[in-house]
Length: 368
Ligand code: MUC
Ligand code: MG
Image (tube, rainbow, N blue to C red):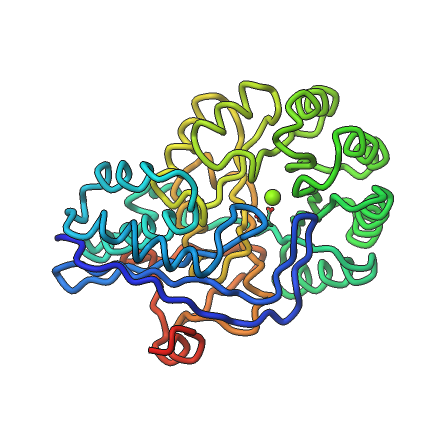
């Protein structure tokens, strides 16, 4: 049970409609499929979604760092040697989605080797999560139509609304339109992707005080140290750290600084191994978590639901699991299906997904 090769395969799948938010926009899924091969002939898979505006990774950088740094460091290690693998990957700062995809592909290979699902191996708490849908920037009418379509088609009743535009009244208007159209029973929360100053964020939250928002995520940059602390202390809405807390040290800092009261866990950037460390850290500190979305495809979403369902602490809230619906196609032989507002974790082995070879041949861009 040794790792003998790690492949990083770039592929591009168009989006049906772009997702826009304060720090950028996504028009194509230019992801990297990672395959970990063992000497038993097992192949573990996962995907890395580059988010250049967030972590500085690109599709090219992910392919290169895996080929030139991570694969040479890991080939030859025992598949079950999780701590050695973790130590080797964590020696390198940054490159979060490249490291996460390798980690998850190794877990997939472990599950396939041991004939267990990743959800069972991680904790086996439940087999499903409620789904939250991210609504990106558009006109108020288009944002409402997107949310209504997703609610009516998939039974989703939790929505994360992208905010962080200027003037703040743009987003206040959009959130108000969503609340008016969807009624009092849906859950609404907001994510600013660092778009506002603390003063703008405070003004927006005051203007939306009657909208029953349940969470406010990353409204202003992590480097606004005192401003974030000031904002968090003056709002009754829990504040979620997302891109400011992508490793256990940053999670500690955000929570103990009073800059955030909750943490978004994204398997796309912390894999299963670091996500589990962060989850237990949050549980110990008494901080809630939300399973976030790195604008994942179906491979990444299967990873999020496998992890989220595995633990009590990560399965309480709706996970952000639906944005693959915006993609024109995907790679799985059996597509994920959201019904009654829920997504089920696959029963394995491993993550429980299979890549369709024809689709991979169609969408891969490395001319193999
Ligand atoms: C999110 O929760 O912020 C947008 C940028 C990014 O890094 O993740 C997405 C979603
Ligand atoms: Mg976010």
